[in-house]
Image (cartoon, rainbow, N blue to C red):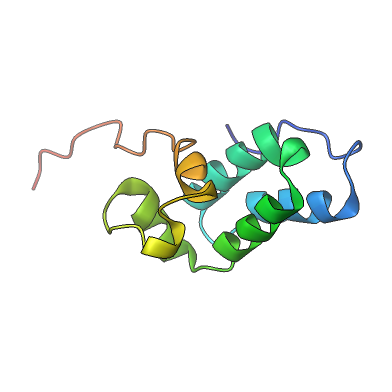
Amino acid sequence: MTGTTRSSADIDPRRKRILFRCWHRGIREMDLVLGAFADAEIATLSDAELDELERIMAEEDNDLIKWVTGERPVPDTFRDGLFPRIAAYRPDFSPLFKDDRA
């Protein structure tokens, strides 16, 4: 997946902004995670869930990707609620080819 597959024509301005921000992060891996989540669920999120998504999106991408991949533990503030749902959209980030030169 290289970008959004969802049209924003039928959603309100706040959801449009969030959808755009989910696909335009600092690193491509977080585009894929947050973007896929937003494509699938943005239309049905409650206002409280949108607030929570914006709090999650305010975190640094390098921290988010480490939490999503399990490299670092997820902080207590994000263990419940929306973050586990977002993390479920994680693609397989393992390399296609193993580097045997090391």
